[in-house]
Length: 221
Image (cartoon, helix red, strand yellow):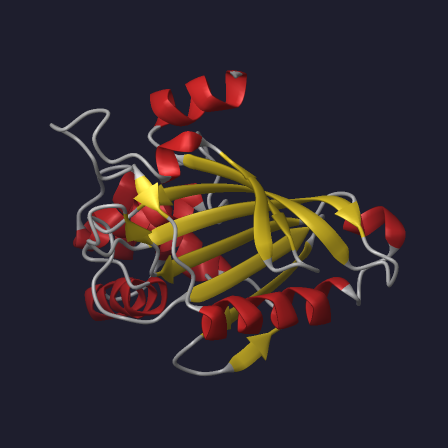
């Protein structure tokens, strides 16, 4: 009941996903009902999986998590952005999925996940999807356009500094002066990050960084 209330209030979908059966064994009812609030139905999902993408993501998660120690597995956080669930009214959305392992299967890979999904279509431009997995100081990322697993964060340390400055309200010239780089370099960093995270604009880029844990709230200058 509390999960149902939280899902409605936070405009998110919450589910418990079984990787062995490749389905949700629990999901909040707002996934099926797009008529509860006819003025704002974006978050009421009729969740339909693209099985090819879903299986690819599970394979990536398994490959990455297999490299973690037992202690590291306890703190795994997974973020997946840009997939295509479908609302009950058949309109596509683009989602950001935050995933936490709840239980591990016989091969010590996650068997059960707690999923929290929200619509980020207003933040996303273009197709594709990306994955970010973190535990402690270890971060892995993957992008559908490159099909290459990277052993580092989705955003570099320098790029994070540029984004933080922009989020703080600095002009491009002030960002350059603060970080001792040219305005063109500032622009290139922001453009590269927008393209990588599929962000519609710089404001969307900041939001996606916050939602995916790439930048912490309150971490701005």
